[in-house]
Amino acid sequence: MGSIPDSLPTPATPAGRDGLAALLERPERAVVALDFDGTLAPIVPDPDRARAHPDAVPALSHLAPLLQSAVVITGRPAGVAVRHGGFAGVPGLEHLVVLGHYGAERWDAVTGQVHAPAPHPGVAAVQAELPGVLDRNGGWPGTFVEDKGRAIAVHTRRAADPQGAFESLREPLYALAERHGLVVEPGRLVLELRPPGMDKGVALEEYLRRSGAGAVLYAGDDLGDLAAFGAVEKLRSEGLPGLLVCSAATSGEGADELAQRADLVVDGPAGVVTLMTTLANTIRNR
Image (cartoon, rainbow, N blue to C red; front, side, top):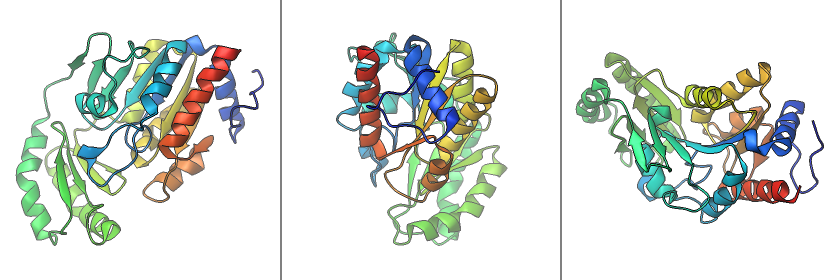
């Protein structure tokens, strides 16, 4: 692999350095895949108010045309991520793909349409039972429920003791999910009940294999991104160069574990923006 220019940060691992070098050497065969919350958008107390970092879309639209493709992989509904990200109709993002609900939904910028299967019946059943489950387990004032359509998320970041509420609700919510054929995806002070069979790792691996990518960069920030990290590690063992980036604006809630496995750690969404901008400038100037 070629050398890494001084303008770019040097990954901490040989595999990461190989992944970055491969991306720079043949960007037209590279895929850049990004989580949304905590990676492109700062974490905020109310998920409905999350928006992409103001420089994220300009940076992504600068980089995306130089790549084979750019993809956003999120637990949010694809349409919500598109709206909150401001991705639609942006020059340079004509071929952006957003994989929502961990890959169960797909939005393509080229058509502006979302494709998705029918909702899992367990989601409606969980939604009906959830208020009673929360009441029986202390109510936890400040805890709030987000209806994602194909999943239900219970957030504890507004509770007086966010981590205590999170830990207290783990067991009853896992039991509730199991009764209705769902699984629980933990994240930053959130427990998401969703259908099984899809996670960011499955979505990313399927996308990369179908696209025939020659290299991949994946950036994420918390527990939900560990599966995507695992997918990149698996593909690297099969010969696909890859770079793992941790967006670490805060510690704990999965960020520490992700940072330990990452090849490169950047300072939250602002650091991701800087990395994308520097990558684009480096590729254009080669």
